[in-house]
Image (cartoon, rainbow, N blue to C red; front, side, top):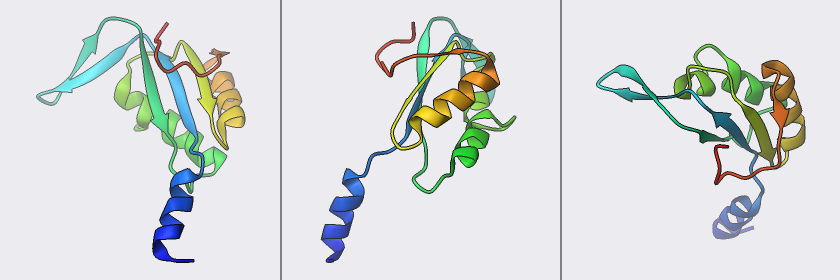
Length: 108
């Protein structure tokens, strides 16, 4: 298979995307964590070579993706893609939150 064909196939493969309802968003401004009021949806695209447990660890770890974006617990979880169902179930159990259908346009 030509290099161009391989890239086209890779681009078509589905990715796992996780959506977490975020009520305690933080932004980093001049090195300081600054709270942002409102209801937001934090979107996380899982790396292609991650296993289920690696993806969960990278999201939930003390220095993980969620900690970088929020000072609280997610309000809900939704996910799609190859690891989507299993990862949503794992995160829902970990954070004690509900699973929703993916709707990245809303933080509700």
